[in-house]
Length: 283
Length: 251
Image (cartoon, rainbow over all chains, first blue to last red; front, side):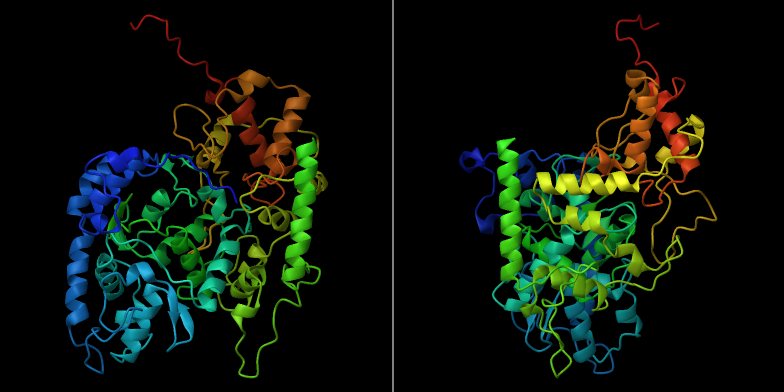
């Protein structure tokens, strides 16, 4: 496996203002984290839109997250419970740093779960909602409970380093299957993920693509929930994955399937060690 | 030459080694390996941790409700057929991010040669104006909540996705720039043949290229290929317009 070492190790270590220690990013706003990564790498992907950077301080996703916090703390559903009892992997109610350690294995379900599937699980078991109830059924759109909650929970990991656990054999198995899927060429256009995400600085039309093998780029690529400016909605990881397969001329991937979680497991592992930018903003 | 041979030998050896370690038998045409996919345990649950990554990936896609396999496709099949890999896709997927080795190149090139179908009456240029639209359009073959409906419009070639063509529009850089394609090459029979083959099945010249097999996979019809070829090769096409003379006076 040849990692493309395109960027010299930052001499930035000597330059003031560049965050390198794990803690520094956690105190920074998303746009500051992005700027720090741009300063470190001069990545064509990260720096492709000045407008994006300028808009980030006013990211509408922040308001979506506020509504999510309120939902999170409100007793809801047939069981009239809040989500404070939900274990996202670091213990019930622990949200700080939980998202950067997902997907992960959960003993109570025997599955590797991503944020969305774990949230659905808690909404069903703690609050008594069913899959057909609107709070769970409506997955997409800034005015959906799912996106409000996911954006809030994701935001509690802003600036923390991606660190999905790989101790449990199932975590490794899912991540490795996701890697095979990443390189799996199929469909009318013979596309794999690698066809678009295997090089640095290449464009689809006017958009510069992130390279999966450059973690400093890939961290922004996988930082969801993010406001999609062109959609005027905050989008989730599962939504991004679905969008990719649509463009790849594959049939639809199923939200919450092990296939989708294997992909998210691999793509999070590929960003390991880099700071999450949450909530992010994208075109 | 020596390096290529060595790499091919190493690749073949490590592939054999990995197959042995993974406990795989010969790969079936559907990509699964019978001995790597475990029988379901008495509880009905399959143990992912006992499967090779390749076997688990196929399982998650085809047997664990990963995709909407019954979703109808525009070509009259279902999602299952759409993402079942053929020999070329399997061979190229195995490379992952490595450069292609000699053995794979020979194999894929042979597959491509066998796939090429030439148009009745010979290779001819069509209408570059329609080719221009087709090169720009990304419509077609997408499967979503609403599939692209080909009765509402022709699927395009989506060439601008990856290539720069005429300079009045922004193209991608995944593939090489095709600006001035015809001006540089002319329209000899050899050029027409090469261009047609590249669009039909580019693996003939670039085994395991990222470029889709626009003809072999049925993404473009013969008349559409002819129109896109005209966009590339017709001297009147904007693809072949002379660049502005930088020394000409401004007024």
